[in-house]
Amino acid sequence: MARRAGYHHGDLAAAAIDEALRLVESGEGAGFSLRALAERLGVAHRALYNHFATREALLAAIAARGFAQLAEALAPAPDPAAFLGAYVRFALARPGLYDVMTKRSYEQINASPDLRSAIDRVIAIALGVLAVPGTDEDTRRRAVMRVWMLAHGGIGLHRAGMLRLRSDSDFAEEILHIAGLAPIKETRP
Image (cartoon, rainbow, N blue to C red; front, side):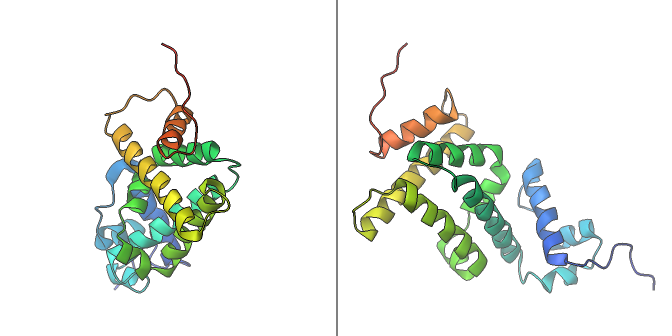
């Protein structure tokens, strides 16, 4: 019996994440099966199970990579407006990945140490930029979650075509205002 061409991969786990991410970002979504992904990679479908026990484990790995990339995009932000602008740009530029990242349940997040760690890095960056200094830890975390919930909801409304935004920065300023982190800016007709 002849082996299929491309059967051996030096790092099948990374190749699987890369190919699955291509599928997600190409607009095909995250509805692929591990069997279909294995076919695209030219490996036996059982080979993927050596690296990912389930499809959800692969999606968690994709989400972890996405949150790591988001952390890189957010880290240079010097203030709340820059932070939210970077967050909004990331979400709108990479909608498929953003969906995979934000559709993991609390249980799924905590079942994946890599995903938990990547999310914690984003939260740490957010705490440094968004939280009001001098407040207790719970108050700081709640302030960050308020902004995150507002941004996520606004991004969803915008992607659904329900909002007309002049720019990402205007959207970020509006979220900051709603969250109580920025003064109201006068707009002129």
